[in-house]
Image (cartoon, rainbow, N blue to C red; front, side, top):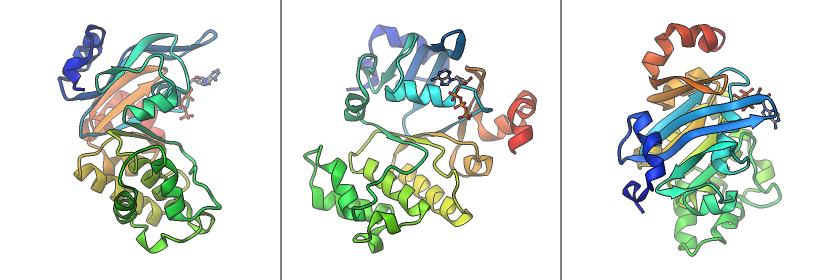
Length: 256
Ligand SMILES: Nc1ncnc2c1ncn2[C@@H]1O[C@H](COP(=O)(O)OP(=O)(O)OP(=O)(O)O)[C@@H](O)[C@H]1O
């Protein structure tokens, strides 16, 4: 399915973000209220095919809520989400994954008692892909070939993150959502994850990354969206965002 197939309701979101038919993910007036608190407030947001878009913002800005609305862990109070021509409203998280959306949460969710290869086989059971070929490819892409038989519990934090990205890759997603992928990592581990994201991007993968580490954002992302109090404050190239006075006052002053 292509973005041409997106129904008429998507048009405002695409138009509002200035994107065209390359839009892979779009939200239209997306809103989430928790009682009297509006955590996400009429957000028109989009991710273009092939880009690495980072979502930043101060604590409580609504980043996790937006991510959870996209993954289907939360239902919107109002608004819609479209992905690759499909209206995701009404689909549960597994059904969203089947449309090509992949999610990697902050802390690694790997099976500690299984080997690296066995972990990679778990998501593959859901597909009819050529398991042995995909396994070999994924081990190589995540630089885990040397640890194919290592039990996951023996991996470092950074290796576990790479393994989980690998598990997502086995399903051949169209968009990877990563929630703070380098939180708590050493410099070397951060380097490895940045290199992995860049190389997957070079192969055409699209990313939406929620991240606090601005040095990491600078390294992986060209396009940044700043969320503040549930609304989009700014979006644009990283250089523009970093030099924007209001962004600096609200967010970067304390994180740059
Ligand atoms: N389940 C919930 N019930 C009530 N309020 C919530 C719930 N989840 C989030 N909130 C509130 O919604 C607002 C946005 O929270 P959210 O976690 O999305 O922000 P965030 O940008 O991800 O923050 P952080 O960077 O600290 O993770 C906050 O005021 C938060 O307290």
